[in-house]
Length: 390
Image (cartoon, rainbow, N blue to C red; front, side, top):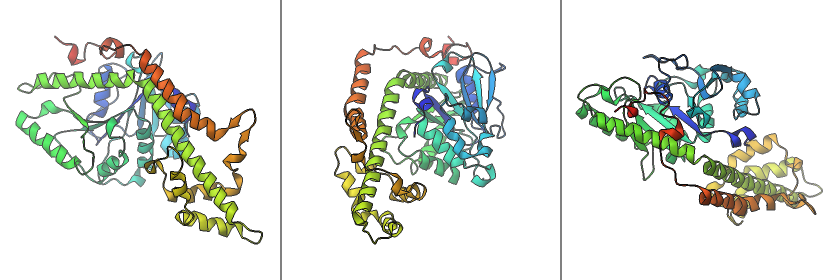
């Protein structure tokens, strides 16, 4: 389910990657927080053990995870399902910054190879998946001096499947290497990631050093500067396309809801068809849920209009679903219609096929051409951003 806070939330930019690659430093740099009371703590050792949500507020304020999860007006209430141990590792920071009026940043604990998930005390991969599913832009950050692509990172990229268009690879601290070394590292990074990103078009890679220090001498300063500007333009595009992305998100969610409703209806109809006066209801339904293909449940859904086989959920998921929700607690879709209100299924189909596409089209027609600039995003709010230097 999507909470109201998720639908009305600002675009989310998620930072992922191994420990000490510069994720927190990059956020400090993009927001110009270095040497201010607002800056995130950074260091050569693993410094971020929490999921940190950086958002806009009238003054500097820290919000505990349990408070964020309890506030239904925010988009983080679903995180309660990951337990108290996780909420203690969730923190929100409100910062009075212009850019944060239009976007939210999320910093994550660094991935440490050979660390078991249980050692964290909460389902780390599941939490990452929750943020990945809701992120509008995902920065996966690497340090060229220590490329460590192990099992933990492989798991992360498996979780990123289907989100390739939102992934941006950041080769940070690029000025710490000579040109020839940097080229070797660039090639080695792609060689390591190629089996993990199985798409025709690879993600965009930004090569630069995202912190307020001057570039090291004898490095490609012009290239790094252009890369920074390109990244800021990329970020601005996500902000400008916020409304379109939200409508598309709602429509995709509506498609999943429709398919789920059709599947539950089909399970229920099959159950009713197979039940007789002498039947054991539990045994009948167990037979159906254990082998739905025998009763053509999923194939019958594919015969419906606008249902793709790639959108069908896993059959195993419905074993768990009906283990929690008894089949007898549902009504057939045909019984959920009223003379005045119409049918629930017809309403959601109308939203998917007509209302949401029309809304998306009207926004596209009414949108004025946008000139990318830091006046819009607020990225130039502090003079420390290097692209503002003459």
